[in-house]
Length: 186
Length: 94
Image 1 (cartoon, each protein chain N blue to C red):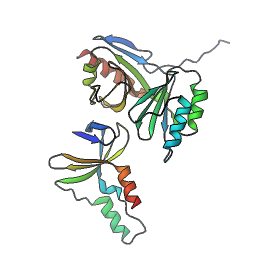
Image 2: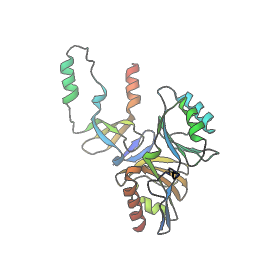
Image 3: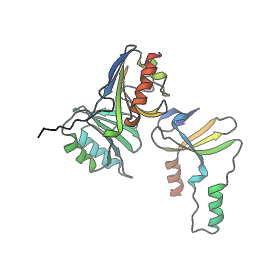
Image 4: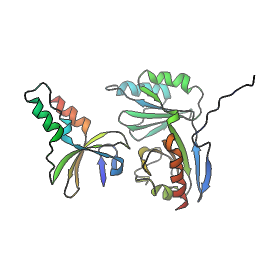
């Protein structure tokens, strides 16, 4: 009998392209989970977050990246996301620890990441993003949830000219198209 | 139109959904006297002022918070923005 192997299919199949010197590439990750803080459990969650990820729980619209490269960001008073790019023990060790304090929902299949990077990236984003992207307002490491081309997007600023955009995987093709068109039109 | 979110700062109104008159926060007690009349008032009757108005806005494409926005319906000027959860907790504590 033939040996079968299951392979994870990413929403954009590892897309990567350069348009007008802007590199657009799918940001691949192994896990994406959302954490909700139960009512009156903020302190307990702060301690648990530090214990589980080794970094303090970020403030609203801020993020942390721990030693294993796991990205954590807070988009609301009681809502956080954790994105694990490739750390192998995340599901077995970190998630059970986090479960001791937070309500957890696995959202890995629900979101798609796109990394945009380049000198003219701000010009490209200004066409589709309603946020003020100046570094005084939206600093490196900040994260915001907003709307781009009628689609819900979480935008994370990695460096001055490098962003990761998370959008629902069901509409990731449409979102990618709007990024491509915006990049062509700058 | 920009809404000055108390936690997140200025955000475009396209991120929000208008959810009606802020009187919806004050649900009548069903055990009270004349609760039928109070619920008709709560559910159907609105003042619809030309001027200052307290409104509920939901930050759906953002942090999913509910806001009470005081807006002038004639000029569209936004006079005050508060988190609905804090207002409600304050009112319940009294």
